[in-house]
Image: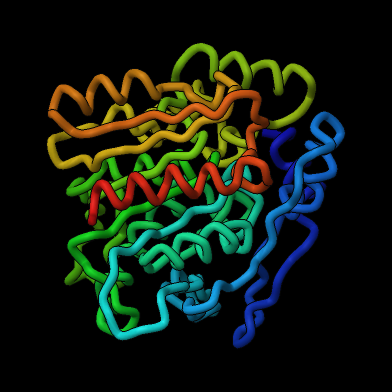
Length: 326
């Protein structure tokens, strides 16, 4: 645990002050678009960053407060939707960053593109491990789904057609949200308690479904052997030996029921980000719950942030959403 404490002191020196009560929210900014581009372009110099570009006919509502997990702290969403008065299916979009870094701006280009296809696309902020470890982020995302339903009329959301997507750590979280439909132990219902957190579809982009597989644990041990702390250990606040219940609880493969949502998996060519995928597909299929898989060859892990793979990813996402909802 001394390693964890020293890492927190080193990495989380950057803080953000909440506007009203000066609540200090620790931030880790190590995962960002430009720094990721610099890293990945060394191996693939042809890649291009995808930046926000609001399409014609799409309107934006940004930094909308959706949850107040404690005094002085507000979590926000951005909302992108066709500029008309119709109701549309909605997609809650969860950024990656190892549960301890990143922010919702990473999802804005994808959200804008998907909104132009006839969806309400909502990148979401959630608490990361510098601020609060597992299961706080899970509670936040379940709250965000309930917020969507509570504000459906304001933002033109069809509450019978709500999906959640996520990239990397966000993919793991999206998968867990969908797998645990109807399981109250995975949510804190202090806000919007009259609304359900059930979603009708999941898009998991290179997020793992099982933290307990041996290959995943070997990666964690190898990181610790180098004197570092893995992202999962930071999030859970301990190793699997120290927090076995949490490591299992966050693995969506263990929570499949007939109420679980269909899943579209979109994967890179790196196997370790597919851990648990085939097992959860088998369990979902046993309940006749639909799944599909798209693997994009010769791709780095954060492929969705860059061309030439951004358009392909959005194409898979919207085709799946059309299949589920239209």
